[in-house]
Image (cartoon, rainbow, N blue to C red):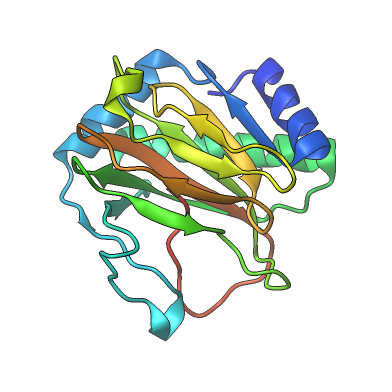
Length: 205
């Protein structure tokens, strides 16, 4: 699913700056299949927090989600490709990534996700966050950018155009999703270390 050149770029960028933004990183045929699958699924309001503290908080996050598993044909292919990426990053970075979880995310027009990080410092079961976009013919005027906030550097706005892949250190990089002028689809997930909580918290946007 992901070429060796893309994997090498991800590994290099994670080491050098803690994040990678790679446009046209993913095969168009698969991205279209994933987008079609996401459009057919019933989504539920996303929650914030973890374990027994999870709650719907539309003033902080207003997207809806559907967890991806092997029962979804395109999703199964996606999960297999991300597991290959996990193994490749473990070989190149000795990252110790143990597992991967992922969900579809649908942002209705005007939906958003406020600035946040995906893992608390010292609670490092989430190691790397990953976001992939499923929106064809997305233009700047559609807005809905993912904004990354690297420490000590200018913010980086990423258009959610189909095939764009973003990978970053879950504990380190604050980010947010700006409201869009049209529906916006993505896949979000994270690679975990072999540590876990009793509950499952939502991954990034």
